[in-house]
Image 1: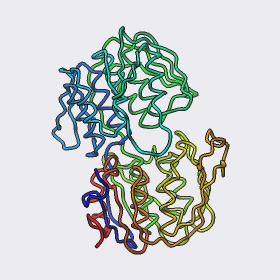
Image 2: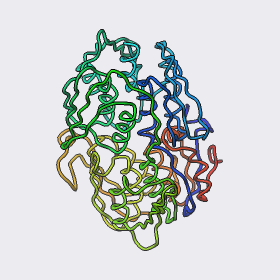
Image 3: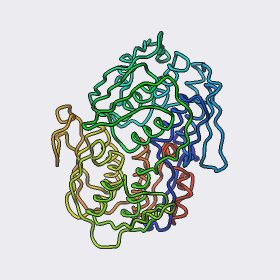
Image 4: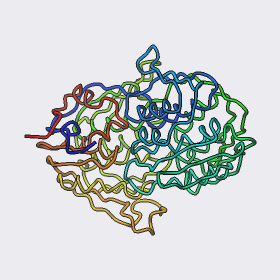
Length: 450
């Protein structure tokens, strides 16, 4: 979508404390992957707690292009997926449904098992650093797949049944771990994956596959062992809640001096974030009553405290929590240090915050923590934030999903009016966020400020 069109722009009038209640549904980083897993089954799968986000719609289109029936269940947040009539989709159809998403790469393993062939168009996704699919392709080759490069994309084939293998990832990549899991479950023999990602969404995907009949064990030191089986069935599963969206609303409460209850949020996978939230000066209250889970976040007044943060793979501080936290830290007293170790270009969004009045300086050195893989590669991956600073309205163009919501937080916290372009990117991971902003008392409208 063209960011200049009115339908892709929000005009935000800042300075209002957000207060009220919002609901989060299933995790963006699990639901589309569980939908792909349904391709592996010889039966219908039912997935509950599905958010209405564009990534879900993209996967729905890709599944339907391959003959999978995708329908709504009795509840609007339930999907029923029937892969009984899986067929080969045209390369053009795959490219049309995929758009700029990187999700098609995860279809490879299931499609190789079902059809012996998979096509990957040129991939898009958020521009936050080097996200090569080399890890994916190397893993598929290790299983016995053949990768053929074509002008329009990659054609991957499996002349014979894929075989279990030993794979060690150079970095605990979430996407590559998902690729190995989705491929290994029906491969012949045993697969051992070392240096695997262990994020909560990975564990939930393993739970989905185990329900289907897979044999997967997670060992110490990031080792996952998969014993291939001959057949998988469908599953019924309720997705874990989206911990990343939860943190975004928490930071919105902190930056605007507000009070937000996030219904559906659960404490277990939020503990690392909650510790940071409390250290900065935020307050929270957990309700873990079964079926009524929620976390209330608020800023009770007083000065927020600066601190040093370092992102890392789970169980460290998630890189997707970093950007909204940076916005909150512009209002903290003193010098905060943020060391980004997951995506080398994720701090680029701070240039816009500086135009709004923030004082953020980027550095190539590894500041405030241990040396990381970016330390000798000339990337500005550390930030020093001096606060508190008053933010003022500005013209903003969203570069990626998490930065996009962080820009919204900054615009809501700022004095004056901001025009935020490219909001369609936010719909990739935030369900109906405009209605949620309205429920919290935000002052905004669709379209360009007059």
